Length: 250
Ligand code: IPE
Ligand code: IPE
Ligand code: MG
Image (cartoon, rainbow, N blue to C red; front, side):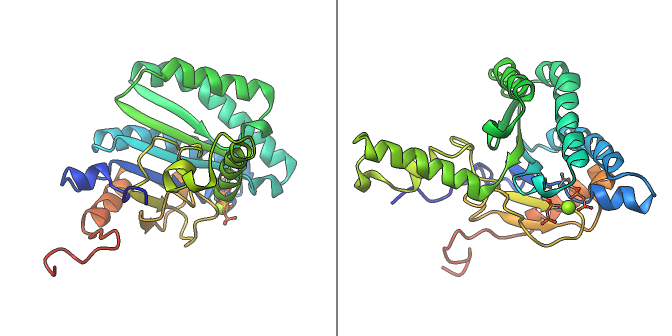
């Protein structure tokens, strides 16, 4: 048996989520509504991300994970994929110094093998240069798929079992968790998805077992601190039970 999913915020009795994860959806529709190319929506999406990182920190959230590019987003036109990779490159180049200065630790999750070498190098540098920061923790899920992450984790465990380094009887939730890209991080307390879609789209499948879900009917480029505050209020009014009996009825 592994430990129950304990959330830092629950443990402290505080109703602000410690870790929020956001599916930043709706850039394409935002652009289409204005007669602009989809790429313009993605550019405005980066501005919404900057606002949200700042707002989350101001509102007492310590960890933020954002979904930027999924393993399924390769199905989009090459021009759009290229633009999305270009935006990650530009974002890290432009914002790294400030993130460093502001005490933000940056981590990128997803399949690195699928990244162009210069982006893989840039991402590694961003992680190394911010590794000692502890004021705020930012994870960018890029070329990320929940199933793909689990496959990599299980495959690395299987290699250790085949080599005799791990016994099958030693495999439990903790050993699998330790092989995930998110290893060592608490699970998200709250998942927010924008754009009015009600699905997970292969985001953090293992980690969201007990996350609260909030769906916001606003396109990501229009997401503001007010939307974030509303989502945090919705979260604060929820009662998390982790499979136990509701408080007050035990
Ligand atoms: C989210 O916006 C960004 C990515 C998935 C990369 P979309 O590009 O999915 O926007 P819509 O859903 O088409 O409006
Ligand atoms: C999820 O959005 C992925 C990201 C936000 C990066 P999608 O727009 O790709 O999801 P679907 O295709 O509508 O489910
Ligand atoms: Mg979408």
